Amino acid sequence: MAFEMIGERINGMFKDIGEAVAKFDPKPIQEWAIKQTEAGAHWLDVNVGPTATDRVKAMRWMVEVIQEVCDTPLCLDSTNYDAIEAGLEVCKKPALINSCPAERPKIERVFPMAKKYGAGIICLTMDKSGIPKSADQRIAFAMELVAAADEFGIPYDMIYIDPLILPCNVAQDHAPEVLETLRQVKTLSDPPPKTTLGLSNVSQNCANRPLINRTYAVMAITCGLDSAIIDVCDDDLVEAIATADMLLNRSIYCDSWVKVFRQR
Amino acid sequence: MAFEMIGERINGMFKDIGEAVAKFDPKPIQEWAIKQTEAGAHWLDVNVGPTATDRVKAMRWMVEVIQEVCDTPLCLDSTNYDAIEAGLEVCKKPALINSCPAERPKIERVFPMAKKYGAGIICLTMDKSGIPKSADQRIAFAMELVAAADEFGIPYDMIYIDPLILPCNVAQDHAPEVLETLRQVKTLSDPPPKTTLGLSNVSQNCANRPLINRTYAVMAITCGLDSAIIDVCDDDLVEAIATADMLLNRSIYCDSWVKVFRQR
Image (cartoon, rainbow over all chains, first blue to last red; front, top):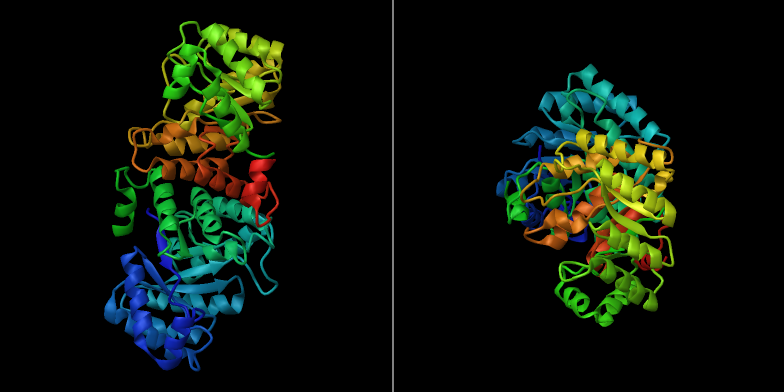
């Protein structure tokens, strides 16, 4: 199973996308949809961001304008589940829901919705009290979420466990715990859940962010990371990911392995 | 425990060193000794190479000329154990012996010599029949070598198990087996043996060798690699290693973590 890259760029937190969402201007959104798809993104994250006055309406519109220019599957990213449902209603391909923590009311809202629309779910190893430090506590949350998949009839491999990496300059001790969580998640069910990370978070406010991002990506892939929300236009990062994939013997070596990885 | 870099460059296989050894010209050898030490090498590999007419004499001379310009510990690299012993006799600091396979006559020659001189031993997971493919078979050889440490009174952490990586363009399926071996080696004794790799071998005759080298280094470190014979003058490689070390929480994050890693 090859690594899945989720393009992070269509997010209203970025200035150009925020302005586009505020003005319902499709152009910057469509440009990034095409650019990330050409860079090899397997999914496009879609987050309406802080400028939307109506997140439900904004999400539906964003999904529609992206689908006008490409058919890359979408990862609908919002804490507003009505906005996510509005996006799912118009998605032409099975989507990912980003995200659901280990909190019962949210599980009861998200999991039936995922089943109805055939969507995967990015599941966060946290609850209302926050992100735990140890791998053991992260795994306890992952177990709750995998049990919920069972309960609501979602195939285990439609669950993407996100062990939540924090910036290494403020929570450095979390970095190895997240790696250990990735290793252990693969023992929770058969087939095992998938795994994902919001990669860029590891280097927030750090020096040499690209170096930290690509190094941690390779470490996490070695421990079982199946996908990540990343800057797919960071060539050095994509090269590192493609090379780790090849060195795990998941894609056959050829002199142009990075190019092949982007095009699959 | 911080990662140990073994500088690969003082090896008669390289043209400049080969010529220096043939002519007993100390200059290129001393220049590489200083250059690699300044780049952060914790050990310097010393291999007389194919041009030496008398390997015993050449090894002793190389050790002496290196020690005239730096006090970096040495890793004596030869299949001729008399040459290694000649080097050990003149080494001012405890050295590494590179290497010993899981073959009884060689164990009986190398281990007592290591004990006599207080040297560590790079132990290869192979015997006369060659390098096995599976992690299980590699681990079986590692167990023999750890048992030999017990028998000959060598502390377990003076044993550096080298699971022997092969070029990924011809033996790609070995790459994940070597990673699994690195994981399992750490369960063999208490304290566990150390681990090492001749890293550059993973990319022999491949395209974009530096990318493969630094990616595999990060993967192997994530699985328990403690040291490797590398090109310490490859800045991108050393940056990747320093960053993996930091992300495993073995060195404290600061904005200049790469510089700190080189200077420790």
